[in-house]
Image 1: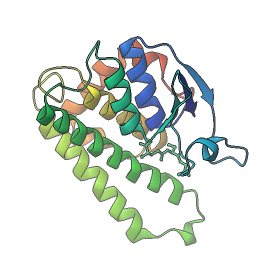
Image 2 (image 1 turned 30 degrees about the vertical axis):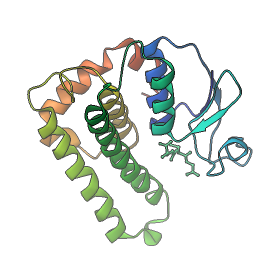
Image 3 (image 1 turned 180 degrees about the vertical axis):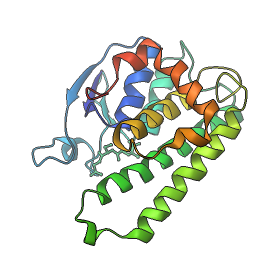
Image 4 (image 1 turned 90 degrees about the horizontal axis):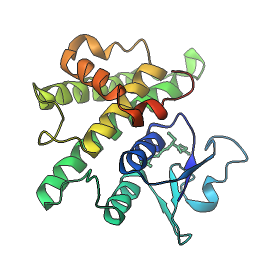
Length: 203
Ligand SMILES: N[C@@H](CCC(=O)N[C@@H](CS)C(=O)NCC(=O)O)C(=O)O
């Protein structure tokens, strides 16, 4: 398998962690989707990473789709529950994690613009998504070890990588102050070899 993407993308990291947890060999072809010479548009009309090229040369894009495909191919070390409702519950947690990091990326990009070009209402709206999302995750986690059904799953991978991305790209956000359980949970996740191996170079 070949995975196209950058070392810093949380969506790419989600898939890298998943492949490592399942023990599936892959090579990462580094591609920066914002650079002029990005190959991403050749494989994904949306020009976004991650992109997975499977053993047959078939191309898959959008990280939830790639995750679904990997799970369908390799049922060993299950990361999505086999039951339909349980699977949808995990997918919803994944969607929440992805939505939080999309808001984070919107803030990160907006803050790269000159101050007078930035839209404060837009920034406030994105901060609201992150705050409510983190509060929801803190409540869902409660005193449990993992987010869904006491089993490590794609939900934990998705949430772990986006929390680390927030720490990495928006260090002043301070999400930890209202989320002590999530903070301790992230420390546990960070100990997993799959998280250690995929840490962005700057962390
Ligand atoms: N929903 C997509 C989002 C992927 C995404 O936004 N990737 C970013 C990198 S973190 C990207 O490629 N951005 C380039 C662009 O938006 O043109 C997924 O889950 O794969």
